[in-house]
Image (cartoon, rainbow, N blue to C red):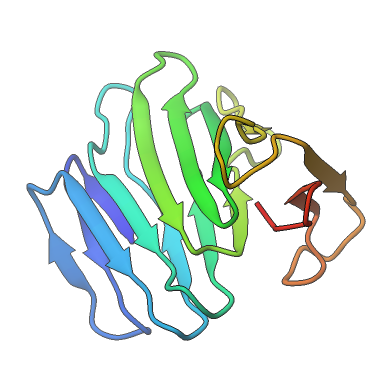
Length: 173
């Protein structure tokens, strides 16, 4: 899913022909029982937001991955906020204005990759990633979250740089 303008973009399924859309405020992908991989690259400029709410349901089985790509030329505040095992939001805001770039709601997801867009030497483009824990008031989580960071890891499935899990039961968040 790649944004190309306000309420516009393209969606490609399994490497097939891209479907273009415009005038859209919501986009939902419902995965299957297979291993689904979804990539979201939103659109935004300093003055123009994407305004497309994204929902990704990975399906109740399989190993599902969301890759979220930041935008070059904008400083972003990207937040990953789990709400239950395999569910939550990726929230991306323009760091300068506080306006929303994208919100991705996800369920039945087992992995997230966030690619910031701050290549070395890019003036005015500094991205920040925040990983939040769960709310203990949510009945499906304890609020006791483990964050394990290994920045020497390869960064793939099973070799994640950061792993987040619930201390009670070990469910991946």
